Image (cartoon, rainbow, N blue to C red; front, side, top):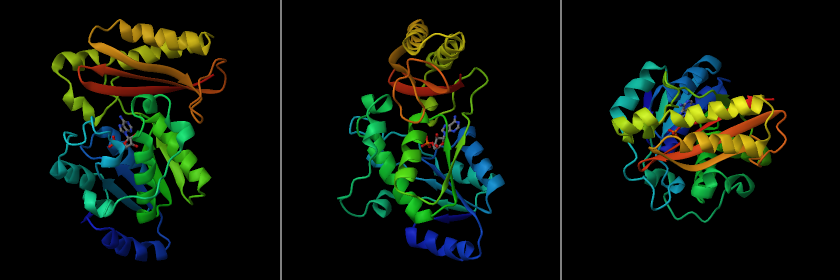
Length: 280
Ligand code: AMP
């Protein structure tokens, strides 16, 4: 595995491979890697000749009151995991490499960015869209891998690719969970033992929502069911629950076709998100 911190160095490393028609798979991450990230890297390894993983905690997608400074980081462990998973290039730039000057350009998909996560984190998806587009231009992958865990992020990136005719294929990998249902997340490390025990309530509430949807309840009733279940857990504080179209992020009343059930809740100061896709 080649560890690269400079854009020019990565481009120089990839150029001969691209010219030799080797397919490039790209996995953008913020590090502190877990089995969820590993599933993305494994999918890229299976489907592509060359695997590029970026580890970059993107300041642009954190609001000033959020956890950019304290976001967990462990570069050595990440390197060991990525090397063992068959990564060819680890791109690990510092903030000045990605943002060497004030950004005067905006990249955003506002229509998909203001509900759900965007309701609580209004500038988040503009930061995501900007860094993802920059990374795509740096790596120029054939396929890019994202987790269903961040379902709204998938919708934003998909639309960005469609609207701007980016010549790459988006691959979405199912959410990897702990045995008790909790979705793996770098932020799970913040949880106290009691909060960790309570945290699967988010997933279990979504499961109850799925049952309600399959039983024929309409969107608002399914949403209420998810909210009610989360409220039953004393250590959870509901941020939102929603029943939406997975492409438009618009609320769905009549539940037919693909539906995304999404929720976010605080366990202490830690905010966790999760979602399920249901085919009705
Ligand atoms: P992050 O490092 O949190 O920005 O995540 C990097 C990528 O890994 C994103 O595409 C996430 O959706 C994906 N990811 C995070 N957690 C999981 C998980 N539990 N299962 C599958 N993918 C995940």
